Length: 122
Image 1: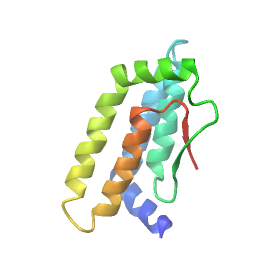
Image 2: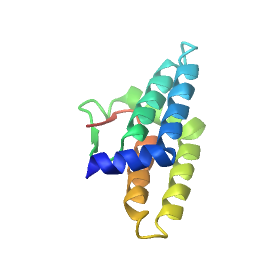
Image 3: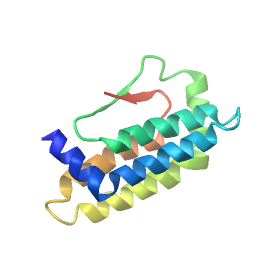
Image 4: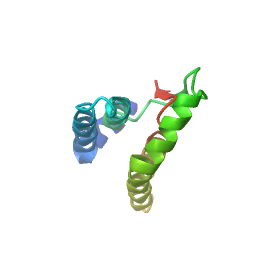
């Protein structure tokens, strides 16, 4: 079932959204300071390509001071905009019965996009 969901997701915009995240992440990696944020953006892009059948999990060192500082910087600079985009997309998709599974994936991606350091997916 997750394969079908991922194929439909990719056809109806998931591919271009993931590609946008990956291109944005690569552009962030052009500077030394932007590399940690670029890596997280690429991670979100890969998660956006195939969100069905994956879950967001915390890594062991997720509560370190550096991860917390990076998460706060992320939320202020990037995270809130990405989170609003996922929230609006989820609200629009949740209107129809067919869109509810896709809205659930946007809510999963919202949690990763608001606080990405110390989180991964499997």
